[in-house]
Image (cartoon, rainbow, N blue to C red; front, side, top):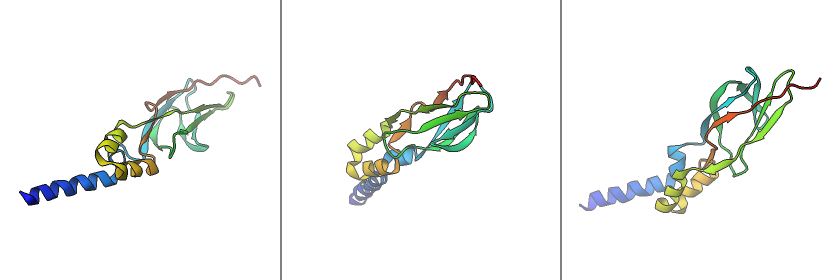
Length: 129
């Protein structure tokens, strides 16, 4: 009986120390970016990641400030959108069950945040040039 209890306590401690959101949702998030312009260049925080329609994994922000999505296409005005972040529900579970150890891992890795619902529709307008 003591061995079972010791293993259960050890297992709970390991899970609490590693960060539940880090395990469950990770440091990356799959997002999709669509536009009224097919083939528009998609930039995340200034780095080109693909063309619309874009589906791929991006790094979650390491703070609540979020990421910046920019779309560029020839003949259209560039459009930049600030993506709001929210806190992953698994972070709260980890904070309540695992205390500060796992939650600090989630915070420092950025795993505690998520980028909206992950679906972004950004329309571009034709430039006046």
